[in-house]
Structure formats: C-alpha cells, structure tokens
Figure 1: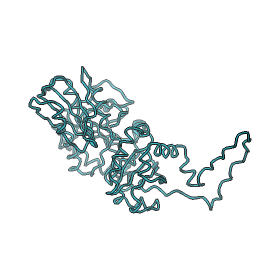
Figure 2: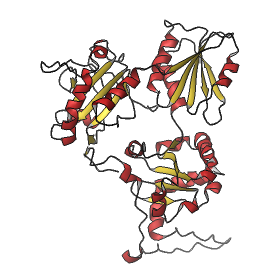
Figure 3: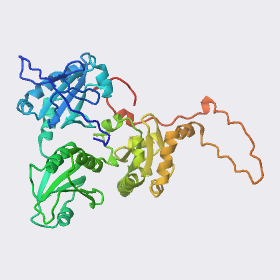
Figure 4: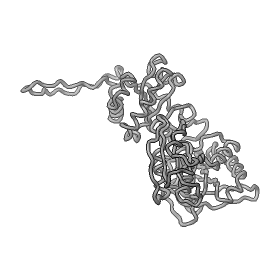
Length: 423
C-alpha cells in the first residue's frame, strides 16, 4: 500500500442463506451493507478490526464473475468461526447496480478481488488461482502473525540489530518488554500486517536500553538507516513511517508480478541485466532513492533478467549479447536509451533527461521524425535568421517505435472481462 493509499473501513450487513452456511456480505450504495469507503460514509460499526476482508467486484452478465461466485461462497464457509469473531470478511459488489461505487474504485475488469487489511485497501489485488484451496490459503496467510520476536538478553540494541540480516527491507520495533497493552506495540503489530508483503518485521525486547523505538535496516546495504523514538505516537504516525520504509524504490520484474505492475498503468523504466551486470541493480536503486524519487509518480522503476526476458530485447533490435541496457516501455511503445547502461548510471542527469523526453513527447517525436534540429548559435552582432519549420516527413518515410511487449503481460481476456483496454 502506497503512502497515498486510501483509508477504507467497511460496514457489512450479514446475508445468511438457508441452503448453505456461507457468509458473503452484499455491498451496495443504497443500503447499509457497505460501511465506509473513500466516498461513502455511514455511522455503523466499522470493520477496521478485521484482519483481512476480500471484496469481489463483479457483474451478473460476466462469465468469469459467475464462475467465481460459488467458489467465493464456499470459501466463506471455511471461515465461519473467524467471521463471527470479526477477523475475516467476504464481500460482493454488483457493479451493474453500483456503477458509481465501482467507477470510484477504478474497477476496469470483472471479477476484481480487492483486499482489505484492518480496514485499509491494499494496492495489490488478489490475483491467485480461483479455487477454494487458493483463496483459503491466501486468507490463512493473513491470519498468521508476521513478526519475529527476539529476546535481547540484556544486550545493547545495536549489537542485536547487527545480527539481523534479510533480503527484504527490515523494520524493527524496540521495546523494553513485550506488553500487549502498550499502544505502540498494538499499533506496530497492525501496521506490520499491512506491509507483510513488502518488509520483514521484528520486535526486540529485554534490552539494556529504555524507551520505545522503531528502526529501519536497508536490504541492499544491511545497514541501520534510521531509528526513531516513539513518544505517544498514534497508529497513523506509525503506519506512515513503516509504509515509507516498505515502499520499494526499485522492483524486480518477473512473470509473476508483471500483470499487477502493468495494470498500474505507468510507463516502465527497465534495466535489463545479466550475471555480469547484476551490480548495476544496486546503482539504479541508489540513484532512484537519492535523485529520482519524485519521478516515481510518472514511471515504474524496474530491473529484469535480460536472459529470461529476451523477447522484449528483440523488439528493440537487441540480443542478450547487448546486455545491460535501459529502455522505457510506455505500454504502447518501447524506446531504448542510446547511452551505455554503465554510463547512464554514472550521473542521474542521464535518466532525468530520458524521463523528461518521455513526458514532453520528444521520444515519440524523434522516433518518427529523427532528432530535433539543433539551432546554430549566431555570432556576436549577427542577426538570427528566421527559417520556417521543417515540413513533416512523407508517410512512407515515417518510422514507428517498437510496440510494447509488456502490455501483453497485463490482465488477460482468458481470465477477465476487460472493461477498458487502456494499456
């Protein structure tokens, strides 16, 4: 869930059928079956205490939605006890009857299964198999505590932190003792659950040090980057701090996550690497984190194994022998960066200019018509001659940039009814 994630809390009305002991909440605009979304507010009991809730956005006429409905209901039967305890919820929204609701939630395909954790909508959807077993496993994973406790045995906190090593970003809560009644401890457990896919979480207790603190250990350097003191911190403050540390600056593109990444709709800035150039991943990560953070609103920064993703290279007229290389895929067309990847990562201005040329339309224009003319500088005292703009190239001389390959890795017509083919 990104820093700008929307707060969701659902108020659900229970629908029980006589035919089966299933619990699926029916959500709509008109009744009080859906509690509070970003644009819908009613004053009933909120479900921000639910550890996990799955919401199926669907339409009755959609073949895939009709297939999922009985699977969804059968899965709910397996969590009757957890639903009664207020830990698990299953909801269904008919987008034909609730057009405004689904439009505001940016539903672009049926069925879409969104995930809420403690009332917060996660950025990532459920994209696993549509079986009772797969859905049940997904829900059970969210019921498992994702925090590792470490008894420091009266050691210094830095000595304990130095021994923690993880491939993911790591967040550590530091408490003199584990006290379930401590609000900081409660808020930390809840916030950690929200980011369980992005970070690893620890609690260190029984220390020589006093005071509640949070620490962030960076995955690439394995160094403690920040320690903050908690003084009457509320849940939102702790959640935002953790979210900031767990939002990845650079992601590895795989065939598993390609659908979710392409559906985000942002152009992809990709570093294709091989074994000899794996060190460039850390260079790009450092550059994005220190110089290109503001550009994450405009492009997704990714790295990809160029041997596994050799097909996109061929669209750029390249092979694995040309690795490493950098390109932008707009999900319509692909543009290669002319500079050598090593050189491009030596100065952030190279990538900044590449992204600026994308946003200004220069990449697309130059691919069609060649490089923009560079005006000659007049000598001192010489007037600047006025020349009319060059006429456009004839249609048969225009070129077309290579079409996007990653667009094809987005949501498939074989799994979804796609409402808008915007990618």
